[in-house]
Length: 300
Image 1: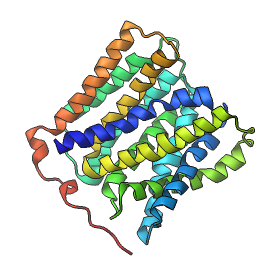
Image 2 (image 1 turned 90 degrees about the horizontal axis):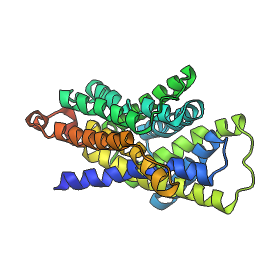
Image 3 (image 1 turned 135 degrees about the vertical axis):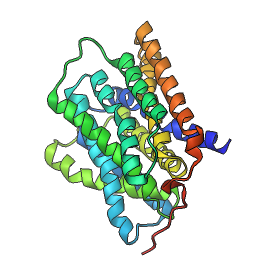
Image 4 (image 1 turned 30 degrees about the horizontal axis):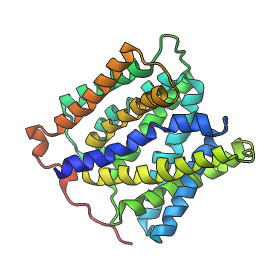
């Protein structure tokens, strides 16, 4: 029962991330990917730091920078680059390889078992996302494909390391450290590589507030909370809910039409998420792995 509650709470994060595309296109100025990413991370991180009033100590300074770079700076940078150079369907389909990468990295870094059913679930999720948003007219761009793969690798590594490196602090504090680090790393690049933002409208301010407070602060608190309680191979497939939510919001809010193929894609995605959770509940999943042991807090 507790595990199901943790899964449900963690799944809220990617479901909300699916609204990012709608908010970005409808409320934010176009053409500022680095600036938008920085403003999504840094103010939210500073706000959370003001709430928790606790800074990293010792080794957690460097680990917070690494995790902030992987989960936010590099991931969001590559994500926006991929989205700008590829049709949305191609970008999302490339990014959908993340659960497969997580399975491999979790084996290398955490000693987690590779289960055939988990591989099948991840492949089914990729197929479902492709049916959901990939169109025959989609054009491929090598740089965009490389950026999409790079973003997936970055987020996968951040997901696994967030499980391996678990400080003796709350998910709220852990999120504050990473968001602030990620935003600070993005700041110089946003200043050097993009022109200043135009004077924000009320819609712009609403969009930035939503992406920062809800789309970053709240969701990543839930995401890192889930990673502290569940295996990365359990948490990562929940990311398939993000493109599913994006398509459903497009249909509901923007009156976009859904084809029978897209409905099939939604069914396959949801089925792959269920299958990935089922894979972890098989008898072999009950055997102890290195990640089953309590984390040892490093206080320096």
